[in-house]
Length: 245
Image (tube, rainbow, N blue to C red; front, side, top):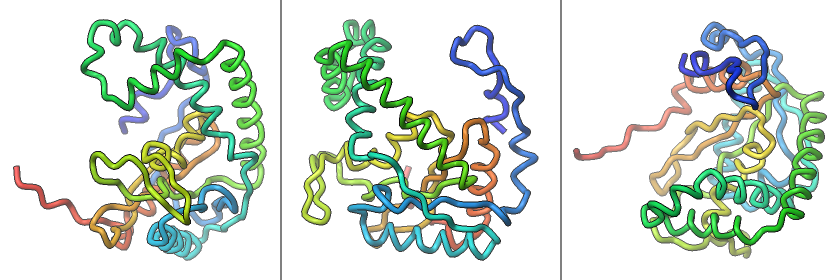
């Protein structure tokens, strides 16, 4: 309901698209039979916790049981996607936060301030080149959606790490925690495709595992419909945390 309220054209927003908005709520109860769900063969299932992979297998089995069809897809040149994303995001974040950074810099977290500092070191040439790469990524990803209606990936390759953890190690590869936790979501933040993450299982460590669903541009209703179908299945429900208030 909230998505339907905030969606739509705003003439004061130069980035808004003047196109009709679907009735997201009305689409939720349509079944997912016939949906073609893309399963990436590369990157999105690499260096990932085996329990997360097992959770994804359970989700895939359920989607097939509901009449969806799984389609293998390959993403292009993903090893450079994070560098491209940071080269675009950090200067733009610096521009958005510069005034607040000067006035209330001490209130920002160390990691975020480090990212903004990175934005100060990048040249305009780097930014322009990265923006060109973003457009290439968008075009190639759009081509994948000629074959599928939706994509399914893990939301993260690792579960949440204890506060203060600096790095994780998976399959002999060390990775900064911030990079690991955002590795699977950064790309679609950059490309602008509608994406949704939701919990789908519990890890043996007692923390939730989440999936990511991604759709075509302006087809949020398909993403929400698939998420709703999964959410209605108690097999993917996770217990509420026991927190003393």
